[in-house]
Image (tube, rainbow, N blue to C red; front, side, top):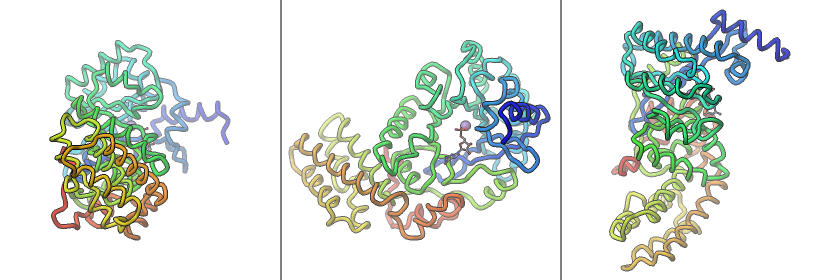
Length: 401
Ligand code: G
Ligand code: MN
């Protein structure tokens, strides 16, 4: 192990020598099942070793990190140009922290790089990292405003942790939220964590902002997020960050296809019931309640439970009880709520008992246990597996609201 001071000067020297490599991780639009952006992620090359940002970033000064940013930007734009024939509309995400942004030259660097590469500003996303506070908030805001006016999208990265607070969303010129992977990480043990993601989805819709959920590692997570209407996702389950050559062949692997239909996994079923509960809790009047809550509505779990062979299980019985209550002429709200809570508790238990990615066919479960190979490779892009709309008349749940 290198001592920390040795490592620090080594990392700084690598940046100064531009021993920087960029890997790219795809971001997919969930409903279309298509790659719409790639995030540029910096690595440092030291002989055989490829050093990851969590190791080197804390060791660099703001000045080093600005040099790093400039290099990643230049390489990313060159790569977009290289991809022009395969992916002419692909967007590029690059990361910048609050200290670098406060130095006041990021917007000029970006405008020059875009002009030099003939890339439209609308294809660039600047992700503001969670790692630092602003030494000069006025300057940083000024920089962001220039970029926004030019048409560059501004994202809050890793929203919900460290310095990526809701206050930044409220007060900075931001139009894109990237939700930290912490909100998904424990969802197999705590499916109720999806409530936070549902709240972020609603917030982005109401604010007219784009939204990407990070850390999508399994099919279940993708299924649940699709049901919840999350517009974009990123994570090892879709694809790992890759060097240029690997990403180019990954992109050449085929066009995306829409991901549709009812939930395929227990976590997806849980997400659907969470939506049902939101409608129940927030619907403005009884007429709309009855419309949405019924057994034949888009929010119905009946088909899922039947296909999963659970209609006679306690969960299925509890769901039938809930539906019987919604069939009544006058809704008994307290009773409906209690029955819905029981369904939620049983679904929680079922998610925990099944573990992630075991609700599908064996092939599906296997695919999800090997996220390295990528869910999207197999099922989104090539049409096999879990997302194929293999039931005739499948509803496009996610787009109904
Ligand atoms: O949000 P941020 O820019 O920090 O995210 C990018 C980092 O997160 C990269 O270092 C990438 O390797 C990592 N990452 C991307 N997808 C996943 C995932 O699904 N799970 C985990 N644990 N890390 C991921
Ligand atoms: Mn990022």
